[in-house]
Amino acid sequence: MIMPDTGHALRVRGVSRNFGGLKALRDVDLEIADGERISVIGTNGAGKSTLFNLIAGVFPATSGRIELFGEDVTGMSTAKRAKRGLARTFQTSRLFEQLTVAENVFIALGGSEFRGGSLRPAWRSPSRWERGERLLERVGLREKGEAVVADLSHGEQRQLELAMALALQPKLLMLDEPAAGFSPSERTHLVKLLREIPEEITLLLIEHDMDIALAVASRVIVMHDGEKILEGTPDEIRASERVREIYLGGSLDEAV
Ligand SMILES: Nc1ncnc2c1ncn2[C@@H]1O[C@H](COP(=O)(O)OP(=O)(O)OP(=O)(O)O)[C@@H](O)[C@H]1O
Ligand SMILES: [Mg+2]
Image 1: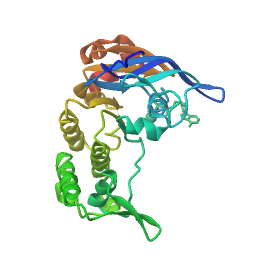
Image 2: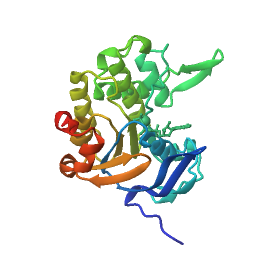
Image 3: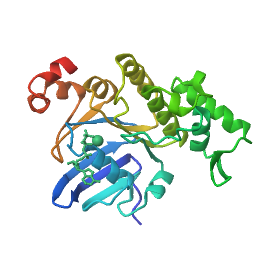
């Protein structure tokens, strides 16, 4: 029997994805050790979200192999991958907008039930209530538990999504542009939150904002036109001519 390799949260081997004639992802390899902090950067349409969707199992790879925690999950459903410890946020928000912040976290903690034909939070568990409060505290939303999600600022909604992903107690957490639409102060706050994510959680972050991508990661993957074109430490990425070219000749200086 082949023993699973427990040292790697994720292995992506020669993964490609076509959408009709479009090669959105071409022969991408990626290895992430347990506990690593990785940022994926790249311009619009580079294939970053497609890579996330393939890892999460939202749609199948056209070719290649994906391993989570040493296990081949290439043909496995999203739900099964989530059960194995994968959590992700989406580039666009997926919250229950008409419910309160606390109710959303409750649902993420598994405290939901169907009542009156729709999904409702189940209130009967004090320990779950406390866990929810701790999660809201961790993401800086302690005072907002009773607020209706639709009334939150954009930044607060993204913080809530982070709390909901953490509620799943993931081993691998994937965040797709968590700073999209953030103000500068919200960005600073987000970097702090991301740095405080427990060490045992492996983090894979897609981020347009260079400051954030380089501040949070120990290793950075650069995607361009469906391919992984570079991989290095934040310092190597800062020094890279190629990255500079891709990010419009020198604009990296302003971004870093
Ligand atoms: N479900 C889909 N159906 C058809 N084409 C898709 C689909 N998802 C992505 N694409 C295309 O694949 C390419 C890569 O898209 P992707 O969303 O992965 O890029 P991205 O790097 O996440 O870009 P952005 O920074 O704008 O979020 C794009 O040309 C996009 O239009
Ligand atoms: Mg994207």
